[in-house]
Every structure is written in C-alpha cells, then in structure tokens.
Image 1 (cartoon, one colour):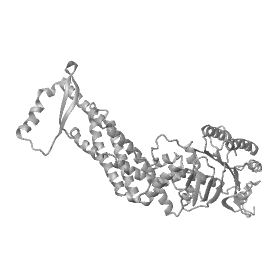
Image 2: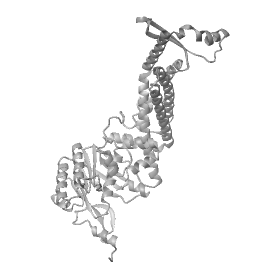
Image 3: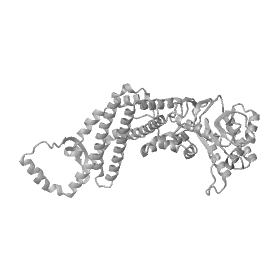
Image 4: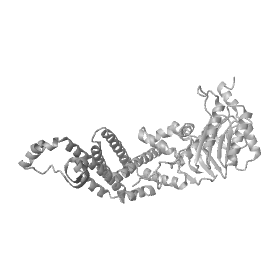
Length: 504
C-alpha cells in the first residue's frame, strides 16, 4: 500500500536533489513561484519546495506526473477532496506521534501505546476505506496512470478485515475480560503468558444485584488486589499483553504510517501545482506542458518563453523569446546592457526546473533534454562577508560545482568572472568553457567579456551558437535574443545618456 503519485513505482525518499538548491532558488527567483503555489499554506509551501528541488530523471517520469496534474486541474473538486484527506491524515499522524511520545514518560507506557495505536488504526482504516471509495466512485473522471494505480492498490487491501480485527481489540481500550494461559517461573513469577480468549464489556447489559455487589464491593476489597508481588505480576502481564498486540498490528501500522506521510506530501505538491496553474489562467498568462527529451540529447526548442517570476510580479506576460537549437552544447549570449540577457537566462532555467518536476512551463511551446544536474553561477553583489573579494568567491563556487558535476549536467553562467579585468576574466572563462564543451556539459553563458565571445565565435566550435540582445538604431531594447555575431560594445553609453539626459 503506497501512494506513488510522484513516481510510477517509488516515493521521493532517497532521490537526489539539484546541487546547491539555495543558489538555484536565489538565482532563478523561485521564491515568488513557491509563494504563488502555496497560497499561504505552510504545509504546501514546505512540500512544493522539496519536490521541485528534486528533478525527475526521465521523460517517462515527467509525463507520469504531468498526467496527474492535468487530471486534477480538470477535476478541481476531486483535488480539494484529496487534499482534505491529506490534511486530516497528516494532522492525525502528528497527534498520534505526540500522544505516543507523551505516553513514554509513564510507567505503563506499553499499555498506553497500545490503546493509542488501536484508536489511531481504527480511524486510519476508516479514512482509507473512505479514500478508496472516493477514487472508485470517480474512476471515470480521471485517466492518469498514477491515480488509477493508487485506486487499484487501495482496492487490493483488506481494509474491512483490518477494521473487524481492530473492533475486536476494543476490549483493550474500553475494558473487558481477558483469559490467559501462563506458567509460573522462578520465584513463582508469571511466565510465558498467552491470551486464550477475551470478551468485551457490554455497557448495555444490566447487572443483577449480586453482580453489582461483587464488582462494587467484594472484588474491590479482596486482599489479593493489595498483594504487592501479585500486583506487579499483573502489571507485567498487562505490559506483555500490550506488547503482543503491538507486535501483531505492527506491519499494518508501518504501512499506514508510510502511506499517511507520503500521500500527504505528494498531494500537497499537487495542490500547489493546481493552485499555480489556476492563478496563471486567471491572469491570462500562458503555460505549456513541455515535451521532454531523453538525457544526453542536445536539441532544445521553445516558442515565446518568458520569465515567470517577472510575470507573477507584473501580473502580465512579459516579452518572450523563440529559439531552436540542434545538437548544441554551448550558447554565448551577448549584447546591449539592460537588453534582457539575464532575464532570458533565468526564463530558461525556471522552465527547466518546472519541466523536471512535471509542471507546465512559461512558454507557448517548449521541448528540452532531461539533465541530471543543474548548476547556476550568477554574479554576487560584494558585501562585508566577501572578505576575499568577488573573484575569489566566484572561483570557489565554480570549483565546488565542478567537483559535483556529472554527465548530462547543465550550467547557467550569468556575468561570471566579470569582477576582474576583461583579459583575465576571458582567460579563466575560456578554460572552463572548453573543459565543459569537451566533456559534453551543456552551458549557457551571459557575458560582457567581448574579447572572449569574439574569439569563440571566430573559432567556430561545432556545437555552439551565439545570441545577442536586440537593440534598435535609436537605442531601444526589444528584450529579444536573436542569433548574431558578438559585437564590440555593450552600448553602456545608451544608459549614460538616459540617466543624464540627451542635452547634457
């Protein structure tokens, strides 16, 4: 019994996350996307970030998750019902853990743990029966393999049998009569106790006057109740019984605990994904479920790809870009200052992260390979903590990334090594880019290192392409990236004249 809504046959536990998740979140402005998805719900926020930072590793996994999102978008009432189950199950699980932890401070904690476990399992089994009935009753409204497989797994479980056995265990919760077979061990201590039968108390049965006299006076005052050794043996017998019951139900308990935790986490992610899609639709901002390509391929294409965090902030769709690359490993992006180069790089990085967590991307069309690792190396503002200087900090970050690199990795470099002279920065960047290129590492680099860009352009590396930020004759920026030879200037004087005014 597993949820398996994020992966066809496994949970998210043990899956490898993107390297340096904090850098990726910061460099790609993902925080605003997380907030949009969570809608102020801390449980959704926590699980959205966790899931999105663990990339899917194959097109099949991506399509599996896409289909579930599509189903839940088309059935918003089903999404709400599933999330309500997830919320209730998560709260029930947390309460159970707290009660078990509190019971450990008592001398008879095994008895208390048994009672709490039976109560928890009774509620859990009833909840799972209800969840199974919900999915069975709505089976014609969803088509995804993930939801259908979950329904099938729940139908194969003997929940009614579990419920029946748990009902019998009420004798240990509400009270009753238990018969034992046991032996006397050393020192006349009770040993090898076995429950032979039990009988629940029935509050509806009326007691005769003699029974009431026995239970209220005679049994209460019988001397063996106050016999300390026998009292200890009886308490020990209760603890042994409690432990035996826990052992019987432990396999069922383990299964339900795992299901509760994973189902809640997975549904919380889908809740965030559906909320995000609905929000974008309300703002008339287009999204597209991408077509993933296998890892190792080098073909990438997209139409009207825009920067999603900017779109959310502006509540409108910004300028998009259309590009098509075939067998491309290196992309150099140059051109006018404030021309949209860094924004373009972020738009691609965001789309790659979204695609590899199964979500739609900010584009009209999008198709890209699956990457095993993503690295973002964006320039940092100098502050007091960077006591060694920006260049040393940049080199240290790059060194750590290179140590973590694996085949089929993707690097996004934004203004890297611009903190030193152009000559030195070009030499450093050229060595790194050449190593990446020779080892098949896909790299996108935004740079103002004109000498480097022109040198690479003249050398005509086979699997490379060059984009430039479009600028009109009057200095207007269109914020579009177009194929072109790197220029000799970044047109910084345009910004100078804008700041001071043309007459000055």
